[in-house]
Image 1 (cartoon, rainbow, N blue to C red):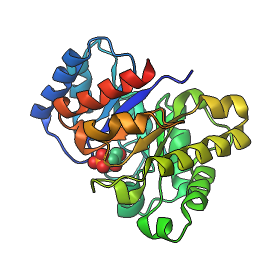
Image 2 (image 1 turned 180 degrees about the horizontal axis):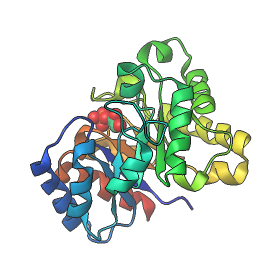
Image 3 (image 1 turned 30 degrees about the horizontal axis):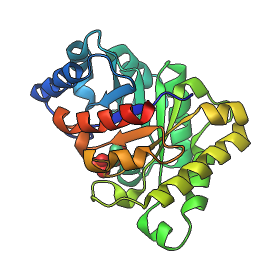
Length: 251
Ligand code: 13P
């Protein structure tokens, strides 16, 4: 049985004072029945770890460089994230792919770096609206999965997130049937490549405009093991509704 996972991506939002939201989130879910993670901006990671204390809310990074150290101004390595107290890292997010021209091969190298550092990699895939409209969704997702994951996968430390680019921050989501189609395609693709046992073990998150109001419906879709949440993870009072919906789906 795959343990459900609610992950929050703060993107380029949040200052030290906003870490109070983490304290509140921990208080709202003292003994969560699902795995929880928040990825704040990198400068807040160490402090976030202190705010969380012994609570099982994990802290993650939003990107890492494939190398351990070196002359790469402005970049952060997986080892550095780990050293700061992070246990997870989001990789291949569509905003990284679009803003920084990241391709699948780079995402794969970052995934390997994350694993070498002992981090859980949350690898994102997703189609643009133009790709969906021209019927290429599954082809695009298949190619991204193939290119972004290493052949020797560390299944215990890999999570996949399906985030349709056009659903991110727009309030639009695919139909539940469309989400189900992509997740089942991902499960089958991963099982074919890595074997049934590994394919069955990898958790598949949905991301893109997940809110407390639509979370229960999304979590009822087969092969959706949780969510990667942007805007609605910034405030404890919003994220708690999503976490509670996931806890109910886990019962
Ligand atoms: P929103 O939940 O704000 O749509 O963002 C989703 C996302 O990109 C999470 O990584």
